[in-house]
Image (cartoon, rainbow, N blue to C red; front, side):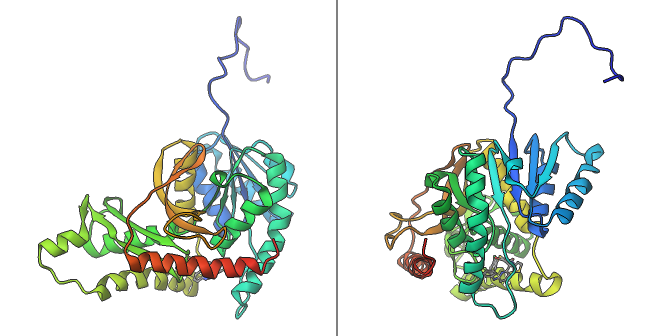
Length: 332
Ligand SMILES: O=C1N[C@](c2ccsc2)(c2cccc(Nc3ccc(F)cc3)n2)CC(O)=C1Sc1ccccc1Cl
């Protein structure tokens, strides 16, 4: 390097700083939102992008590299060849076939399983110790598929699950009360999407549990009000799709938030898709559902045993049965 005159008597630093590498599979709207958030939050020393379309992939890589002057130094590489992911600490999979209008969920699922057969084994080969985070939809079943195809222990396979549902839930409650969403704790668990389960007892604002607050204030809250907020979570997903055709920012930030908890060993609790067998009476086979899970450098460090109402447990078990039936048709 002609620009710098080397200084004398240098010695290498003690090898303490680990080099953190994240691979993002799928350079679509979701994958690039995740990559951009990882960059701005300085979560990795190296980001590898993989996609099936070489031109789009190179374009996204170059476009991100050109932001280097405004970002913490991060090596950004990209290839259609999975060898680019070698030695990843975390691999985030957002690749997936787009749902064709009127396509059945089973058909979309079968197309995505076929894609995963070409995505998961090479990732596992190049990074046998990595943590897999699945964002592709339908996320609960595809997290199961990734677990089966990778052969990884279940603590190293997690799905973004209802982390996004919960972040929308928190936004809507915070917006309703005009407080900061970071002061609103609220969890949605179970199956991501239309059949999720809102945990009313988990809602607290500034640490004050909402239900007991309403009881103490003798404020009659109809279940409809709470159900209304949960319904608004589902409706807002459909509204975003109808308005912009896809979602990217919320899922990007929520996935990067999970990556931070994992890579920075935060031991934070997130509602994410984990192997739910054995919890809450769920034992119809190996299903992944979102439960409040402790996330750290080893992936899923534990699942909290919140006490659920009978109705909440019943709905979780119903989702487990639906997913288990769907999975049995996949021939995995
Ligand atoms: O915000 C979204 N957008 C999507 C989307 C993004 C691009 S095209 C569609 C969405 C929005 C609405 C419905 C829906 N259904 C769906 C079900 C199974 C699939 F395999 C794929 C999509 N998906 C994907 C998705 O999961 C979400 S979150 C979401 C969806 C439905 C209900 C509640 C929530 Cl919090």
